[in-house]
Image (cartoon, rainbow, N blue to C red):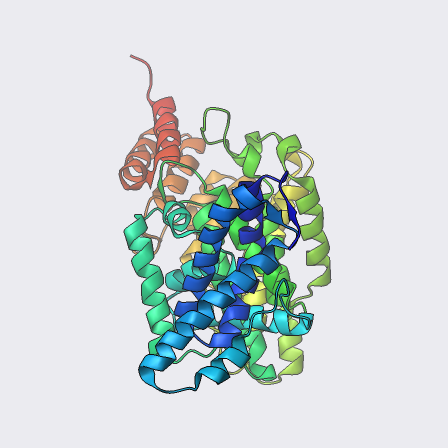
Length: 451
């Protein structure tokens, strides 16, 4: 096999693992039907590449090299396993897994189907959402276990245990490496969307830890959605979700200053936003009509059960879940678009944002949506109106620091300094994110009169 000694081996291996891990693993599982052996074989192939490529040069087809190497390891392990079980004749295994030097697969449609099977297996509804998110990022996107642990703010042993638990669940529950019936695919893709959004939210709004956001995790979630959209015909849920993710992610470089401190949306340098991503999202939104109206037109007599935007939500059994989830993502994206498309903060159309929140509340009533609407209402009408709209909410409705933080800010804007300080104290006591903690502390200090 031709090699390129001048090409940096480490960089080439990092790139092929990042771009091809999921496809290679899917091919190995398709041949062996053994997730455990396939993953181990691919990991061994990567280790072998790390040893030999710096010495021998990078192969012309790095993915093909890894595939061939992993298949050889897999054959040996299947031989050993099947010999021990005295089940399948070795010649059958050899024929099924005979290596083909430098060849991934000639049928690109089969490759896409195998990758989609892997995605759907990792995000099966039988798996807990946090486990599914970790499995999808590990097995489909090739994110190393140590990186996942850092991104999800858990120890590496904890993440390894989570991944192991998920793999065992796949075996114990008999989750198939197969495509669902055509009619069931949209609902299964909704589960993929929910899992991807869970991972994105963990990166975009880190609830704990030293950093305001974990940009790499949010980026991997976007890459997962892009991968799935490349495998199937576009769906409203995936299109609306990608638009929402891109709009939120486009502000990543402006959300903190050079010292890592929080920069509020009105104060952000909009020249640092990623405007190509905003334009792509706007194009996606233009192509996504109201999915609930489409669902109602196509399914007379059905209703959509409420959902909480931003939380994992299983599709409705009546088939309307796909439209409901897509509309939730679409409305949230429309809200984000109002911010992203405003040339300056003063040009933000807050009345339109309130209207979008009203539509969200009508279809998906939840305390979280009410809290977001209160902020928009305060900007549109005044802080007292925002406070009145959430007067009956408590920490039982929205646990954590978000609710008292919003109350504190609105109270401060209304000139009610004493009440604002008390609310800031409550928010600070509950806040687990170091960046937000410092921001809340500074805002509280601003309200204390000098002695």
